[in-house]
Length: 82
Ligand SMILES: [Zn+2]
Ligand SMILES: [Zn+2]
Image 1: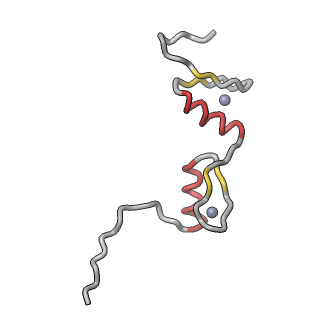
Image 2: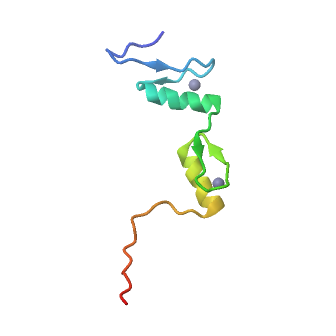
Image 3: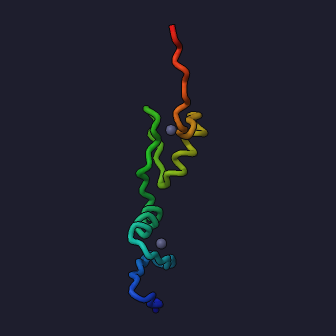
């Protein structure tokens, strides 16, 4: 039933009713994590135990809940000369 895509291996989600296919195994793994609800992206704020399946959700939480700004380039602080 799968269309053969030359010699590319197709990774198939075996959850019934899903049928998603991937060409990279890590993509399938990430997809399966969403099925399993595995949350391995943790909020970086000490004392906060929020966890997320997606890094982007975690980042958004950090921003909204803790007002953490996304990391920027270091601002060049002019050293105060005494
Ligand atoms: Zn799936
Ligand atoms: Zn948090």
